Length: 147
Image (cartoon, rainbow, N blue to C red; front, side, top):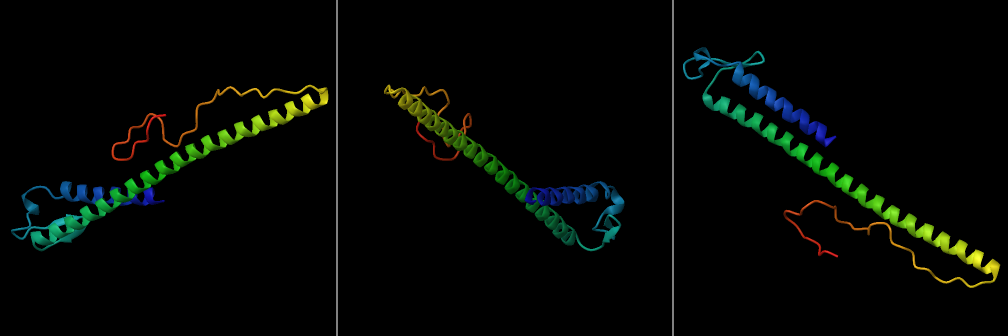
């Protein structure tokens, strides 16, 4: 929602700015000598200071829109990162559960035959679970030590 609102504000500010620039070219639109500046049919008569103030307002709206877009992008990237972490944790829990089920089944099968079973260590075939994203450098932040 924040991303969409930011895009709307940014696009609106760009459209207003470009319409003001391209719609008022030539000597007839000079503000200093009784000229007239118009945008979307709204005529601005006054000093260049009022036009400058209008430009500042349009620029502030564009900056607000850009800020909202960046916040939305950061929020969605963080959500993707957390989703990947939770998936890795769920996979580790599933592996542990499967190992426990296998050990229980082996123990039941061994107890039924009367022969003791030896604990055989499981081969680690999956990659270790880490919280750090892979393949991405950390420009400004803590770097975890390599394992």
